[in-house]
Image 1 (tube, rainbow, N blue to C red):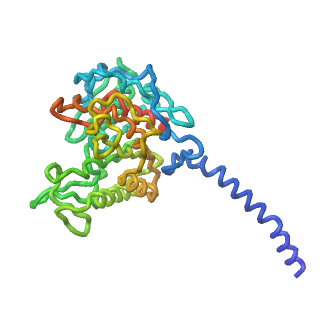
Image 2 (cartoon, rainbow, N blue to C red):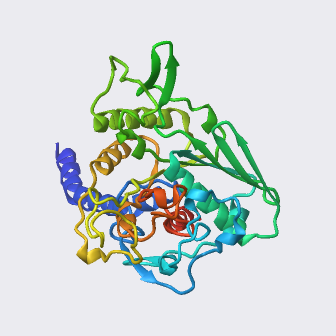
Image 3 (cartoon, one colour):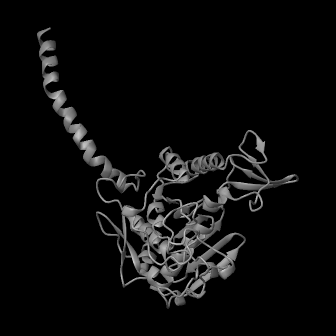
Length: 368
């Protein structure tokens, strides 16, 4: 009984101290383990360096490349080639508040990803970023041979010297659209992952097409796995589709072999979406970014849905949280210098060179 009593007394004396030491070790070591494994949650940068919190600053060394070196950039993104006269919008770089965003080095990128494949999967905003990355890499190695191929909805840009392939797969909803005898069905609970297999870096996006009116939508019915609808709440459909995508990533992606990113919601600048447009109508004629401290910020419902889905995933997915920084760039859209010319008004996509180059600098910082 005395021995037992002494043992209990000793336990009371050192257990609290040991527990405190273990807790301290966990606080210090777990973040390091997450970094080694490439894992971080949406707000992982808080307390150290948030690359996505900052402002746009004038930098005369920008842009990062000359568009004339990239003849493959699509007309809808080639604003200078389409006659845009102002160039101030090209001279801004993103400056995080508490750290420096590393300058993009295309040779370092290609060497690091020699013999690897990088795939963008999504809509035309994803295409915008893919075109930007292809041009940034090509401009860094202008004398290196490259090969461009298009097979169905898959575009492949290969840097033959390094055997690096940078690809874009068009899939505006991520989930499948299935043709039936009675019409096209947007199947919110089905997704084909065959194209993802063996890819080293995956970058996904989806959003803008979910709000298309009936005359523009590429489907006739929506199937949520339980019922078919002629239409349904688009935000609800978007979240169901994201959850299907998330389950597919959790099931089919090995994080030891593949890094997964999701491009955040890219904002448009039509009057009903964002204020601060000088003409009160759209992005036409805008030549400077908005000031962060004068621009009220409220998260878009699509952002909230995306972040909620990412938090509940078991596999690490890195959010390229580009929404806030892009909201400030009301000056950087094609406007009347896109594919439609003066008959159109594009306040959704981005000029190249331009904002998607910064998205790729952030991707580079995450990867390298």
